[in-house]
Length: 231
Image 1 (tube, rainbow, N blue to C red):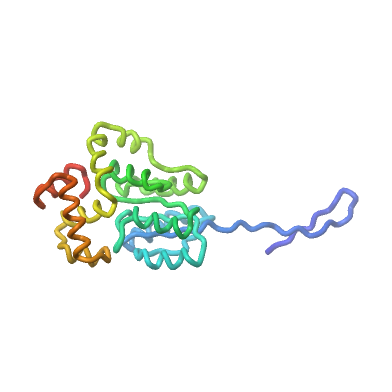
Image 2 (image 1 turned 90 degrees about the vertical axis):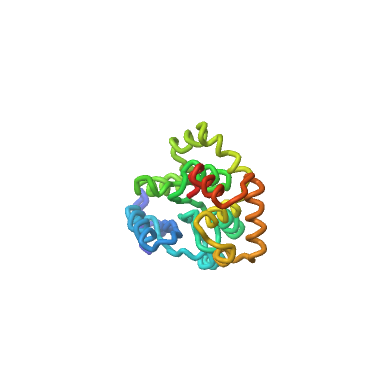
């Protein structure tokens, strides 16, 4: 800690004044792929005021960290092992209500950006976009704004997204996650293991998905997921 001595006009010394050091902005990066976590960390090093305090794909490690130390921003993929980003966002806010969240995803920008807005996230960036969009999003969010690119918002309002609105409102976030696992070829048991659920719970979600969408087979479910860019 440095000190600064101030001289008054009468030539007398005033009391030493301590310089206030700005606390770095703490950031957690969550993604399944280590190379992506590393790339984001390197990208954010352009801002010396940012401090990466944790890089992980394990939501439990993040929960433990949040319970003991304040965090300013979490950058995370919507798809995480053992949970989905939207469910995890609620849990994060229960522990630290002021932490800001930026979602990343390589899936449908229209669908997931809309859900991110509904879930109360502070921003959304598609992994298909330029990497610098992540840096700009972080700057905007930490300045008190949200970051949902105008082209994304316009896309959400388009006719294509309006036809997709039934999926957004009818299926829960957990059901969307299970739907994506189902069309990826995972069995009920494999899904249960990934999401830390019972087979019975997964079966119930599966029945609800088919019932809500009016579908009767996995082939129809795959076609539906492709139509709305969920895979």
